[in-house]
Length: 317
Image: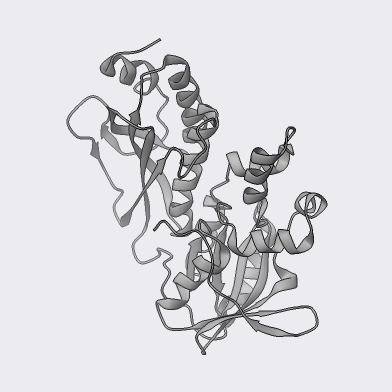
């Protein structure tokens, strides 16, 4: 059943529970009025997802909302920022109340998990697409960035890599997709806790959206550096290795993308501080290599063989 625009906003979005602080005025006016706490900097990121390009046409609306939100909030995690507010722009071919009900439910679940308030947005008619803009805050001078890595810094990643692309493959090729891999594709976990823990420890950080090699290369290019990766240390889940060959799993881990784990660098003089924090985190992290002075990506296998690696990954154009 179709729903009129303002009824749509009131029914499916204005009524969502609010979790973020500092909302002076939210949905219902020309602008939102927001208050950033004293001594904090505002971190802002926006992602746009287009049906047929960034998500499959048949994806359940509830899963789409949760996946889109997790991917966007992951950018805040990579900066060490605490989530606060969300704006949403929806372009829809029709105002289908069933689709909107599922989307609103998934969005509300994600907002509750990350402590977000929806403070504004827009709805239009057209080919299905959604843009989510997240806002968060971080103490002044403590934001994690892609700049700052130095030769000798160790390289770490959170969680396991390659699962999301395996989940997509399962969705497209298997009648009965593996629940774990499908969940890793549909429901990425933005590593907010880890990002907060890395403040004043990591020299550089980013989230893995386009693939480990492609995203790590973005970090390296800022300062014309290189990296040496121990391929046997790339974290792969048992489920992934059970369903696919080790080579396929490694290929997805290096170049698949969509995992939304964090990749970060730890200087030698902060290593002990980091190791003391690590056991208290709810997500596993693994050291996979080191920053080098010579530009380029080098992979080292278990036998010690070294080979150059292309910074392959997802390209929008």
